[in-house]
Length: 336
Image (cartoon, rainbow, N blue to C red):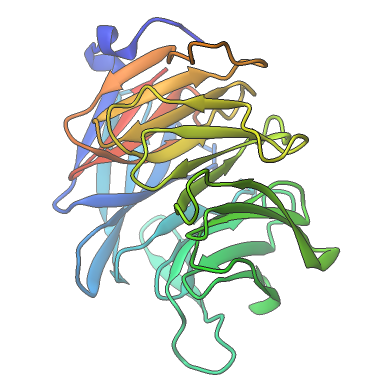
């Protein structure tokens, strides 16, 4: 990992920009590696029912991003998250989205076919809005969703059935992340990070609570390279809290160099110590998390300034040399 700043190297080959006709929020990078062309899904953020998902193609040889008009489709409400099927051997890209429901789509070369619409409500045709979801890399039949109704729902998406539904928190659940095959964690407006093991559904372990009671936690990222570590962000805070699940309640580190609220975090896919964050200060910062934090805090090792507040950060194992960010109506890939 280069310790120089991205900002000082903004040559044309260091970032690639896609400009959308609408404000962007959700983003996902396909793990399929059959060609030099990589699919990227982006979702609109329009405060009305009619929204869009566009499938883009990134060519790493020509450093270009193009939209495919045949792979652009309507989505009810802004998608709160997008993810591709984590197993790149599937015959077609499968894309999942959350919003009013959990939806799955099959992406062919020139067409999109809806696969399923999954409603986690047992008593109504309507579903409480889903804030996020995570696809289980080790058991891809499982997707876990988080909802404003305080629940997390574990789906068997191959059968289209609910495997289990848990009342996870006292307030809205804002995010969910898988660790091991049967272990997931969630964060909530109640200010807690809780870990659940599907072998013992009656109990959960609280590994962190906001220092100020009821300060909502918004996002959760579990370090896939070292499952001892996860990171979360607080509402209206410039701080990223890094946790070690072996020593609950006390953070390993608090990263506090953003000059505005942090909106998104993503661990590096090939390094267990690096994490990227994006915030309202229009900055994407890469941090190296030390084993022991010093008394004066931690400075980022790389910095990039975007053209507006950064809403989304993606650092995909499919493209470990590129970080995807979304701000305003632009999606950028940054070379790291």
